[in-house]
Image 1 (cartoon, helix red, strand yellow):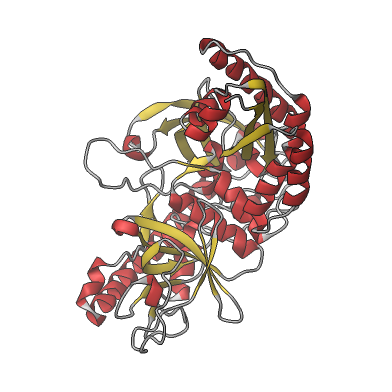
Image 2 (cartoon, rainbow, N blue to C red; image 1 turned 180 degrees about the vertical axis):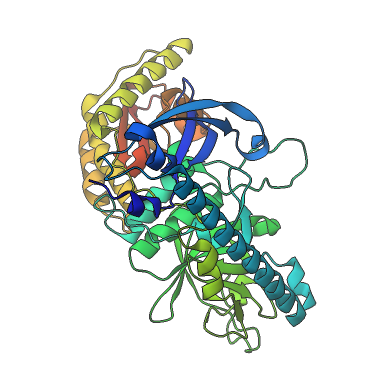
Length: 482
């Protein structure tokens, strides 16, 4: 039997996300709702029906999208039913307590910000982001968007986690009207994972949470990249002091070697490989630090986060007061990642057959016949596996065997051409249209010559939450006729 009093103390809501999927597989976030479920604790027969109005997201967060009727029933059965008065009183006390915590945090944040501006007046132009709006337009402390997240047995290494996050689709938050302003919308983790795509902030928050789960000291960095475009990425602080930047949209990693502007250059220092230009603040689930160095240029910043003359910290207790469970601005515990429901072999075969049909149609329109070489198609598999391994680990392997097999498969006097390309969706027509835009691929698909043989290989690599890395390679071999 479940203890009703214990259940009443569990204040985490049930997060409901509504997703629309069109015929092409494109997803759209329709609504995100936090359901207060504890009304069932005082319901007769321990069953209650609730009608909730779902509102839109982003710029439509005040627009109703429909009413959802929910039937709640508690399993296992409660040892007793609580009175309506007890449940109502509990809700009222929680609201008062969290409202006071949020008021005190806001007072503290304003005072902290004034102190930060007094250090240097130019600080008011730096990207120091204390609050961010979620998909419902609710302002939440940025620290609440990050929590240590363990992937169970679905991801084995931090680099594999970075690869997983990078194959989730990238899409900027929609904006109504003109101008270059960026729409403010940080998605909650469940909404991001359900729609399988999001902005750079969503990717960075997820990657930081996964790296924290793997035991690393990880932070989300808020700053800019080239041309002053706002951007977020992830940083890990090694126990040996090594700073590593992780680009959540690509999975790339960069070691940060700061340039000391006061030292006379003995040799000209190479420009940093990373795309980041300025940094305003870093944060994770219990720390928030603002950059108070004379310059916010990443290449000269020192990342000694314990040095308060370089990084101004917020009070850990203040952050905990509004980001711990129970606070209105705190998000419920992150859901565990789900294993992929995509069958990699079946999906690879289906995509390959669809692409073959598209190639035959395309060549037919050009007055060309198509002859497929199944053996050559099969020989492309090791190359696709090597490309994915390199994206995940940074290590290239197996190229010698691939080159040897291709040389054996292509007769003397014949030419071989191959074109690999990578996607994070499983739409064959979209992929084929993108391939045709490449002159190298178009040259293969429209190949003319003697004894022309075409090949195509698709390899789908599955990740949690049905995210996929799709590698496609088109190839041809032919005898040149001059």
